[in-house]
Image (cartoon, rainbow, N blue to C red; front, side):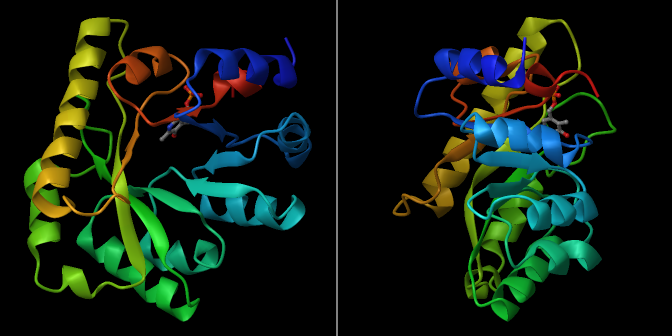
Length: 220
Ligand SMILES: *Cc1c(COP(=O)(O)O)cnc(C)c1O
């Protein structure tokens, strides 16, 4: 099946209220252009240089999402154009995104990434660490970032019950943070969870944004 067919099939499965982020990491520009021509406008990348190169080569109405671990010294390269950073996993990174947002005279939307999997290898905050950031007195002065939700990656396992429980944990963190820190802020609304293998489960558990790569573009 071609890219356009895969996208069409996914669109039928995913409710209109859920954003499909096409994860195009490692794929060449021509392949992204094919997805663009089929109507896709939101792309996810996990490496800064690759995202900058693709941004420069492709149409300017694409919404670029950074989904991979981000080093503070590289924020400046994507700050002028990135539409959403899914992978905020430290206060230091958030402060740097704010600084670069200010330099570019814009507010950069961010998600707090949580560590929900059993694997040690995955990045992300604990609920205690996230609370500490949001309670910090200096947090309210970060005028050039906006926290619009949470993100997480489930364990790499065939056991659906484990994956479902991890998604439920992320959903509960979302609700907790919303009620404590964003009660009157409708901008805090996203739960980014679900990939090629588990997006259907993620949507059942309340995902508003799925990050799908190999199901659209083939294996990497
Ligand atoms: C690569 C990646 C995805 C997409 O994974 P697929 O299994 O190819 O759909 C989603 N989220 C993150 C953070 C990734 O790095």
